[in-house]
Length: 239
Ligand code: SF4
Image (cartoon, rainbow, N blue to C red; front, side, top):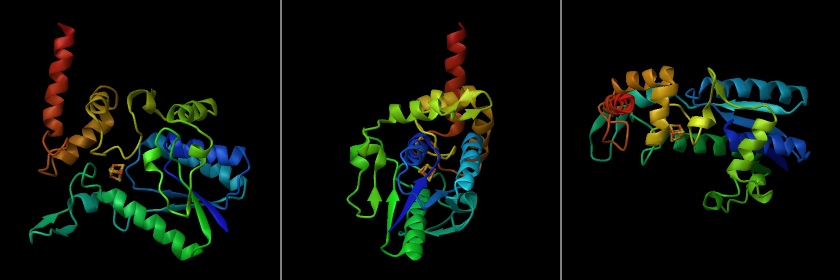
């Protein structure tokens, strides 16, 4: 039987991987599905971890979408059930999580083709997220079994020196989740913090909004409308 850790290099899956190594649990391979849309801070952590895995002779594999994420978002021809055709699926998130669907399929296909039925996949679901635990016989949940909450995971990663530093901003101090920077699941507080503290990514969101008619937030509010709102809020605060 082979043991494979699926990581995204967010706080939970990273804490899981670090714990697996600390506790000397069996580990044959680490896989990362690279959407190409991760924060730079995530790629920095990935590079550090790759270095450590290499020194420990643990296989590291990077999977990726069939087509570049941006192509699927804006250019790929999409045939809808109602017979209409569009260029791309537009924003990923909410009810239209096309990126997640492809990620899950790609990882499962990879594991099945490589290991058949002979594998366990470690998945980083924290103790306070029991609803995300599935009955899939291939999946193991070390964080849940160790009773490590999301807060514990972040504290553990910080303690070991991983802090998701993006140009001086620690991403977990302003975001609830560190996932694709263009994720349409971001809440208003997180988006306000993009506008205030992450101008590089905010500007990229504006570029993307220019390429699609679908408003970013809940299919109702565009990035430009959000910007107006955040500008007004900061002006009001100055008075
Ligand atoms: S993190 Fe968001 S944008 Fe990225 S694949 Fe998941 S739902 Fe889509």
